[in-house]
Image 1 (cartoon, one colour):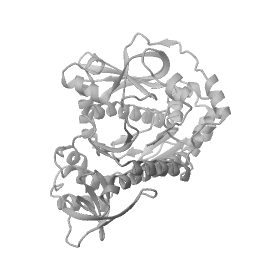
Image 2 (cartoon, rainbow, N blue to C red):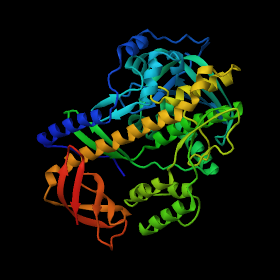
Image 3 (cartoon, rainbow, N blue to C red):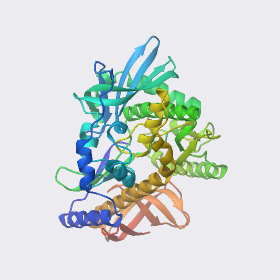
Image 4 (cartoon, rainbow, N blue to C red):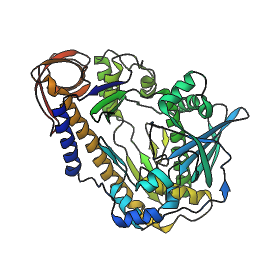
Length: 471
């Protein structure tokens, strides 16, 4: 499933789309500009220089090209027949004063929102894109996890320390994948090796990676909007395994300490499994043996039927939430898709809850008491994160709907072909091939997932994102 991009071409549609996206922000009540006191506090903020100096270690970051809010940096090396992985996280707890203006505004926002016409950051850019960001060739305070892995990729030991680091390179996914494919990985040379071992550890735990192709609204060089769909590169999956490993370590620390907040997801029930099995059979790619994780890992990414299967599998990855505990560790804390207890601990520039997790883990690691401000506010986090997650999901979905309506504007009155992804009563989720639009449409009773159907484009409304199709 290679990268595909569908453009909104007509200038009139572009103008209407720009207005619709602006109105969407206002309708969702998304905070944009930072209040003056927040900006002033952020400008004055500075983290204490850590005593531990790791600036001689060549860390590197790996993110989408052009990113400025760099949360993580890694250093990978062999250690006997195993490995040593250092994973540095931006020291946001060192910059944000508990109870201060930046803290209060971050709690109101919850997370960074990525809109088609600009980013709405969690923290003022002077922090998120400058002083706290792990940018290359500058010294930065960081919270550094050091993992010892054996030859099979199993974590045998880990620790967390506050340290000064210096990233040597800001890598991006595409060029790094190209370099690794040429055998010239540089600072990322061990990433495929370690990533593959961690993926095998995931399989052994019974975990599952969904890896549905990304659907993102992008702004092109000429100022127009487009929908870009692409499958994650292998380097993204390997890099994600470093983050998952860190989240599992954070969860283990907090469970041992009896205080923290975990990211949880229940195991799908038998009804969900049965429905998914039925869908795989209807799509001609039946799940017969093995766990659902093994089945998803075995799908051929070049098979056109893989996308409908992955879309159907999303029903198994529902019910994620946050679990707070203080005093008694939770009895059942496993995140089902990961196959282990897990916490959000690697994106503090972009996600509120990570600052609490990192603060707890650092206190536990250094033998210090967990700060009172953390314990007293832990219970507020699930609602804050749920609210910001709802806002982010709605922004993403409504943005895509409006851009898809603009893409179909020139085709009103014409017929398009679409692949049926999932049946929903008398309607179905369908994927139009060109332009690349995913929407719903009425279908005939004999329609099955995977069928290619002809649909008439009756009406579109860019302002609301509504698309009306007919058989």
